[in-house]
Length: 172
Image (cartoon, rainbow, N blue to C red):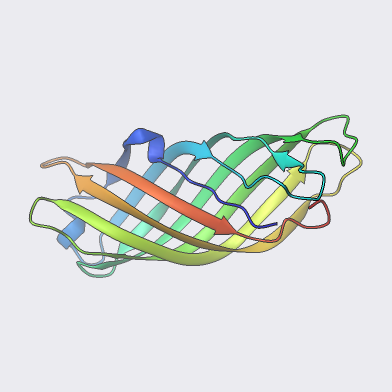
């Protein structure tokens, strides 16, 4: 299964940044986010899928230059399985995502920084049903976003859409 995760970072979530991150090579940025997880549907011929749910996460970024940063991210989501292919006593699936990404951005005179991310990591899928085994898969991650560092503060507004691509395993 390939699936999408779009995190509209809580509409314009606040991230915590080191000042002035956008110009300072070697600066560290700590960030947190929340958003909507929208998995692909039709994981099998019966049309089974994970329901949309809320995701939370965070990470650490190192600013390499004005235009590039390295990020490490962690996210968690709980979704319910919906469909008829599996008989489950507990339909909850817990998923954790870990990735290491390169962020490339172009700061604008207005203070906004549109950017792209690409990276790789893994996803751990933990079905809460006792009859199913937990598994971990390699995952690719791609996305785009925009951030705006609030003047004279440690805060930035961030809007990001991203995609995780991985094979779901024996279940889909």
